[in-house]
Length: 237
Image 1 (cartoon, rainbow, N blue to C red):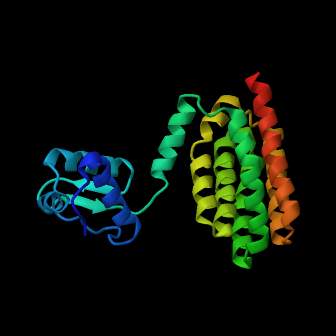
Image 2 (image 1 turned 120 degrees about the horizontal axis):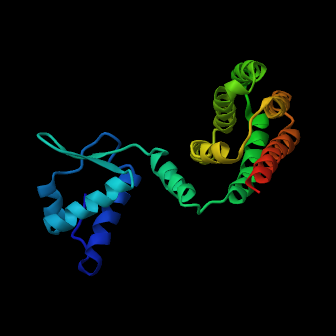
């Protein structure tokens, strides 16, 4: 499965060999890597080099190192966690501004809504309308129910991404919407007027998706992102 590591770049080579073996599907999620003794023999590296390489692979989310009897390195399924954590750190250290995020979201949200309009099934539309009804109920109850409304808004955006069937858009949406709360808490005032406008935007987007009007869905989604960015920018100033 593995060969002796190149001595000129031994550490990187160990990481790359194991990583490629996992990415190529030769080791699948839930499967154990060979034991430490076997890996050392195959790769011809020291215990210290091997353990450091395994720690890097664990940080990447490719394996989980389990301790104790029967423990070892277990291959993990790819998840959004590592991407989310990286973006969260960028936001926390103010490396991604509100303007950066908006610029990115306008294009992605617009494209996702257009694709959803092209690909939505009747069952998808029923699910979107169910979420929209939840949003309506929160909006009618007023600003005291802002958190519930914002959560349903997030679920609608994630549902639109899911409809595309494109794992890249799905992953990006999870990453953005799992970390955008920091901007909402800092800059967004979601009072009755804003909740009603947000609901109207979402209802219009879902209507365009149901009618399979891709261009209209794109324009509505882009306008929706820009509208609420404008509110947040005004508060930021």
